[in-house]
Length: 157
Image (cartoon, rainbow, N blue to C red):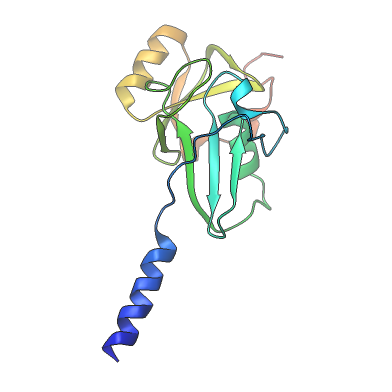
């Protein structure tokens, strides 16, 4: 009986472990627009599923557009974005952080490739510094709405 409990607990733990982020390359295209993820400036994103699938995104706004759909696939095990305080600004590599705990700067004078930038940061002080330099407001993952993702959300077109 003890062996059965151990096996069940071992399987459960393995199934819920968070996968590591994948470094995106020119082999990865955005799950929303199909563009090569690394050819576009700004933070990238990736969604990992329990079946092993990984969906890369060329920008955080496309990740949110996909994630916020009413029919987005269940069984997400991890979502990562580049910490823009640590990643290369033009073509981010590394600096992957949990998207759900990141601080996002929305608005300001920096536009993303597909509308308003949602610049993610691991630390609130880095987001505050970004706001001092570029304007915008600091929001959380759960604050992002589909309405915010429209290209004209803050008067930009």
